Length: 484
Image 1: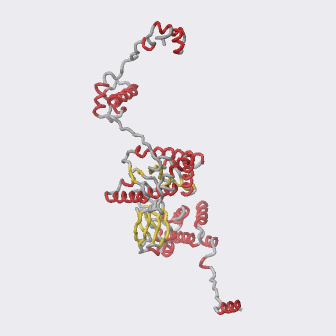
Image 2: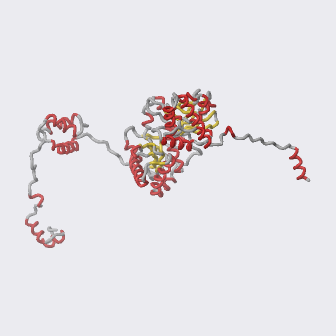
Image 3: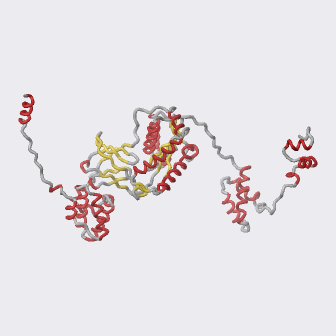
């Protein structure tokens, strides 16, 4: 402005006072340039060691942590002040910014609607959820569409497995009403970890077949590279935070049963999806149509039933009705249950058990399957390998311990088997457990005769009802009468 205008006009156009204009005109050097840069106020504590000792260490081992270098310098130079740690860390960070190795670059992607869906698992143990007071050790299968942010979550009782992935993914796709063009997983790292090459190939084949059934291209991110699955990894934290907040507002982390907890998770995910409803509807229109039916989301095994009326699957003993001894069952293994078939005929569903540890088997026992044999051989209860799991409720187990203390082993076994038989035959398992708990609290033994009377009628004492059928000629007479 000063090139073509006098000082007052140039100052006004520049936005400051006339006096400031005359001052600048008389001395054009900026105030920040008039003084020499301020030097150090104290001597550099790292001057004697940084270039000579620290830099060679950084060049030889670029991954060294700054705190490890500091501790090594303190060992070499005991007189080095402990307060220079932060100074050393800042100096090392600045050196690495100029001379350090190149770092991995994250390339932001442009996503298209209907193109990609992601699956991953997240550990929920930190929330300390309990079912009827028992801790629930579980994961959450998490599916997410990248473009719209549609989410689906499914409670998983076991680990990361093909069965868990197949069930959760299919639930998500059928709830969504379509399938994306590409599906990405995290390589099922936990499922692959302890498998041999043949088993890994089989797992890969099943996963590829699952994606092919829905017309999706299967992809996997590199193992240990979480940001390649970032669109679902980042949402894990948001989902877990939402669940934690909801639990806090609920005032309790305990649920009546697993179904109630699953409904709780579904409600939270539904609220998150409602916030993106418009984008989800837009992306839904671009998804591939679903096939006519779901594909298998289970593992199938053919297992023999032993003379103990049990079969073993994945280090877990399961009891079945004794009439199946000697038969081979077709078992469909899901994440939370087993469906049992004899040939092509469905028999029953059993809850899935888990091994206690890598060396201890688990047990899923129903006393109703063996109680008829125990009545004939009650002493078998004493050393039964799954005795504690046989008792349907805690009160029964505690009462058996009380009986063993109060009487002979034979009498204790006979009385306990009678109690279990009564619970089964008269359908009073819960009520009988309450009475046994009262007896335990009051320090007395159960009165079998009184209990039989309480839970009457006794099936053996029911009267036999004989129905006399009329002669068929009576029907002929009725028909002739109607015709007339």
